[in-house]
Length: 69
Image (cartoon, rainbow, N blue to C red; front, side, top):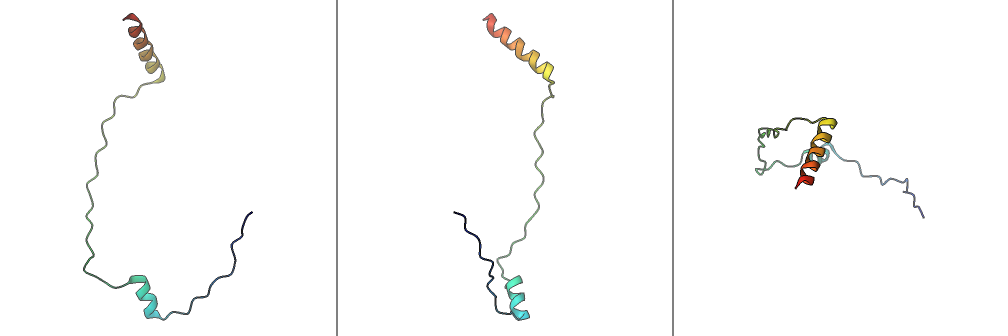
């Protein structure tokens, strides 16, 4: 059974400009810390890209070497 959300909204009391500012920005404190930007981490080097043909040939060669032993 599905329930529908009620469309009624609760009306909030009107706020004075000082209250809006206090809610938006809050009080300043000494606990604020500065965040430093980190140096980007270099990506690991990738090996050469293999085509589907070369990958298939390498797989066949490996299977043949396995059959020889």
